[in-house]
Amino acid sequence: MAELFIGLMSGTSLDGVDAVLADFAAPRPTLRAHVHRGFAPELRAELLRLQAESGDELHRAAVAAQHLARAYAATIEDLLLHAGVEAGAVRAAGVHGQTVRHRPDAGYTLQLNAPALIAELTGIDVVADFRSRDIAAGGQGAPLVPAFHAAVFAVDAPRAVVNIGGIANVTGVPARGYAAPIIGFDCGPGNVLLDAWIGACLNEPFDRDGRWAAAGTVDGALLAELLAEPYFAAPPPKSTGRDLFNLDWLQRRLHGRLVDARDVQATLAQLTSTTIGQAIATHVPQAQDVVVCGGGAYNPTLMAPLADACAPRPVVGSAALGVAPEHVEALAFAWLARAHLRGEAGNLPAVTGARGARVLGARYPAG
Image 1 (cartoon, helix red, strand yellow):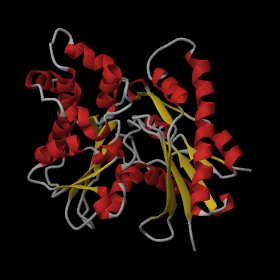
Image 2 (tube, rainbow, N blue to C red):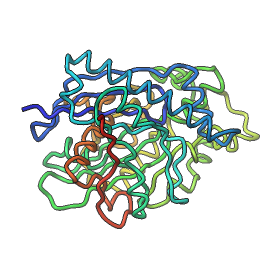
Image 3 (tube, rainbow, N blue to C red):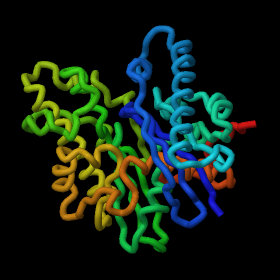
């Protein structure tokens, strides 16, 4: 008998919403349908503005959350239509929301969302607010996907799983059946600086296929300056976001340097690849291979230097293992919604630094 859950994810890259319908009747979830819905330009621009301090934030954030919830609900409707499934057949939807502040050091993380409105519009129970319970228990509230990575990608040898979204995170997955802890942490910028720089220079939302970066040359002195950021050397547990890695962070390090804009982009691609490789070598040295998911898996200008940075470990996209890169995070939040309904812990204290395992999220019934 089918056990259907929906997962929605809109990440740091702000490119839109990925939604999946997954069947958890078997030990390994089966993807029934997937849709992507881009953000309206005005909503994306407002979400981007809300990433930094600005005027009238409380009102603007509340209004943006309503627009975001309606976009989420419309995405769910598209997904159900595509799958040919009625809303009543779905147990719950896991809806992460849009992170606009992530400050575990100050005891909070903030994801814009209006889950009660989503439940009202779709007629489906919604599970949301996944991160705050872990932070209340002294954790980072992130990353939350390592447990899912281990459930889906574990094999008979240890491996690393890398998600390259706006921020890149690494999961160390032990060999299947081996009693070793799963580790995971945000290792640094994924696409966030690449997107910010091309947006500032060319008014483009992202560097399609890394073509602009491929036209440049890595600037060694600039790369060394970027790699000097203390975050990279900090030990896990750790998590980060646009609060640290943003255009201002980059421009402070560019101040007084005469570097061609394309060379900056090439250097940022190398920064992402280098920091991922260093994180794996330092914290997951036992990994026999590296599985890459997230939008960065489709960027050859990232993947080529990443293969060099991870050598001699082979690097493979998650699609080769049966899960498309853009499906992984949304599937993870469907999985976390199911864990919430089952009363199962969704965090890994060894990953987040929380005092213990906790059931994550809050449920908003449809009726």
